[in-house]
Image 1 (cartoon, rainbow, N blue to C red):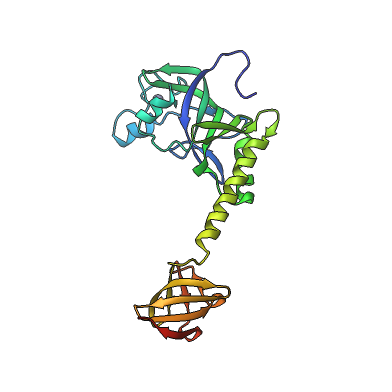
Image 2: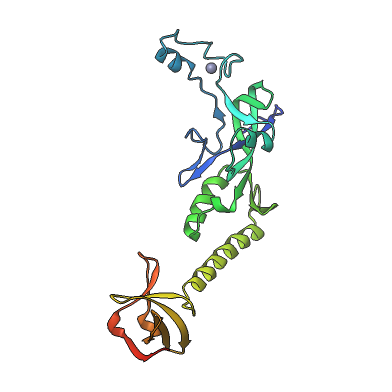
Length: 252
Ligand SMILES: [Zn+2]
């Protein structure tokens, strides 16, 4: 256990960034699994820039009551929001110990380690291989990991038992739904617009088996083989070569 057994740590709330390399503070500081994050004082650096005396307190006293150093944590989730962290896509509870300086809305601590992590669905990558490698970086911390779905919390990874079936099912279903939606968006339907290259934009009137009838302007209805109408990813639209379209009647 990373938190020493003989102390009762304070529990606060934090927000993190999470990328392929793991968990980081919003200022970019890396959190390492199985290792407490230790406070560092940068007051001497700022002091020298401002031309002031170098160290403003004994560097052995971390965090100092009169300084701004320490690992920060808020008292509640609401306090995090009040501090302006609107996007709480990766947040959680954190153990704080050592010297802990108390403030109205939170603490500055000498040592910190994650206790529980909450992930919003939009924080989770999409491909299964990426999900696996990214979640591994979090699971290494050995803390419980929950998924936030609407106002529910789903267990994703539990200390001692590993990945949870319900959380994984949720992730897999979310991917499936996304692909079904994408597929539907990619199904040509009456009313869709098709660029007949060099002629203009036509509107699908009906789809008759392998043939699509499109109206170009008010007058021309063209027949195009379904397989000739393709998505142009770059322009994000349906397109068809003009020589694949056959005019078969002029409408009233
Ligand atoms: Zn300091």
